[in-house]
Every structure is written in C-alpha cells, then in structure tokens.
Image (cartoon, rainbow, N blue to C red):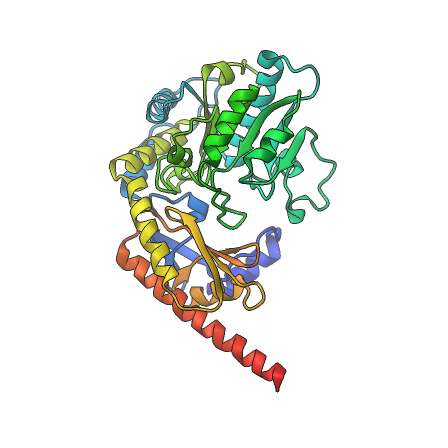
Length: 412
C-alpha cells in the first residue's frame, strides 16, 4: 500500500485523538526512519524522548529477543527473575531506596500522586482531603485525575467532573509555591523542564529553592522526569543540574529503550513503603519482558555516556540553530537535546515549518502552535545535526518568502 492508503485506513477506523504528520513509517535504525515508500528521515522527536538510545539499539533488541524466548509475563501474582534485578540496578544508579514499576508515564504519575496522598494522611497526619500543588502549563499525562489539574483547555473540554485536591501556581516562581502551601498541602509536583509547554526551562536555582521550601513546610517534592530524565537534558536526571534530590521521581519513556511501555516511581522507603498488598497494582507492571528491556536501556544510557552526549551535542545544536539568520525565529531555548525553537506567532505557524521539514527529510513536532520541538536520539552525530539545521534554515527561508509575498499582496 502507498502512504495515502494507510492514511485513509487510519482516518476511517482510528479515533481522531492525534493530528500526525502525513508520513507512514515502517522501519527505523539509530536516528533514521524510513517510510513505506522508502524515503529516509532524520528523527528529531524520538517518540517524545522514548528513543534516547535510538531506534532498535542492538543491545536492547537482543535483550528483548532473549527474554521473549524465555518468559514475557507472570503478573505480580508470582515473582519473576528480572524485576528484582531491575529494581536493584535502578535504585543503585539513582540513589533511591525503592522503586515501583508501572507501564506508562501517566500510570507512574498516578502512582506518585497516590503515594503522596497516603504519606500526607498516614505520616504527616493530614485530617481531611490532601492538597497537591502543581504548575501551570504542566503536562503529566491525560488521565481524568491528571487533566483535572491541567491548564490546557483541549485536555479538559468535555471530560468533567474533575478530581479535586490540586492547586496551580506559575512555573519557575518559587515564591508563588510557598504562598500556595496550606495546612492540607502534602506535595509539590513539577517537571524540571516543561517539554509539552514549549520547552520551558526554569530560572537557575528554581529547583533548589523548591527543595528548600518543601523541606521547610514538610511536604514532598515530586519530580516528573518522564521526558527530561535518563540523559535527555545532559544529566541522568534533570534535577541533577542543581544537585536536588526529590522525594519521588517518575521516569518512563527512555526507560523503555523505545521498545515497549515501562515506567517507574523512585522514592524512599518511608513513602513507597506505605503501599500494601492490594492498595495499588498493574497486571503488566514489572513484567519480565519490560524489566529485561529496561535493564538493557539503562546499561546503554550509562555505558555509552548518553547524558554527556546530550549535554555537548545539545550545546552544539542550540548554537547552530541560534546562528540561523531568520526573522521568523523569536527565541531558541532548551537544555541538552531538548530544544524549542519559538517562532514569532504573527508571522508563521510552527506546523507550516514542521511540514516543510518533513518534505526535506527531518521529522520534528510543533507544540502550542508556535514552537518547534527538537529532541533527537542522544546517539545523533554532529554531521546529522548539521543536516537538520540546514533543512531548518531552508524551511524557514521558504516560509519567509511566503510571508513576504502574502504581505505584498495585502499591501498591493
């Protein structure tokens, strides 16, 4: 079948909850993917950072195949030989006492929220409903509870009633956080870098300040590192940039090596130890296939020093984009290989540039209409970055010509 045939089938039978670019991919290797007609593209999205190690990394695929030939699923009704090994390796790597495995990032967030509420009631002694503070423009998933504290109308429209118990404050404003803390506050949950909001990096010292505030008021600091963690922003965890250790950390995406869903919550025994048999669970959470894959994904991340690559190549990538002379660019921002190119909203929609990039062999994604997000696999090379930047410059130049012509027509 051709591209148009696949698009027609998807539009006919699939619920329209996404607006993907019209490219139909069938194969991937490293930083490259190929469509059904054999065209090659540089993947600069990495499935929203799930492919930090690149497509079909040989060591991760080998672990997948070997484990699939032995045992794929037991449920947590029985023990398996991979979960204890993953738990030990993950905790030793990150310095946490315990982990709780789940599947998707949204499940990890829900798990962290439940842990924080139970800690608030059972340890802190909150009498009544607990409150959790979050940030505006957050993205923690799309479950009913998570969208209950989202400030994005598209995520909420038509899905009420919503889960109570959340207070929203501006991202990057430590004073607003402290002012919002009340007698029933149990936790503050934050993304160290807001990816979906348009790659928003908080001011220096913000995470350190939130840690001190949480300590002062005896509330938990919960970091959502599902997109920013495991090397993406130049450290193993984004919080490492300010030497901050949250009480709970959610990870996912790159923990999967881009192979199958796996996520986890990291924390202390004081908090995660409050879960009791039956209080939380998942049929597939901690399954041996996912655990074997996650173990390989972690080894690749550490042994190939992917955080360092993200740090060095991210600086290079941002510098090269910043050197593009285009009146359409308003700002280039980011950390590591999580980069946002903010366009001037009055002159060109990001979708237009993203579609032009696709025609030039680069796959990226727009967010919030005016920002192009670049988040390639961390195994990308400088030569491949140069290719992406050249195509971006060309796409911006073409868009500028269109904008200029439209302006001339209006004047004429």
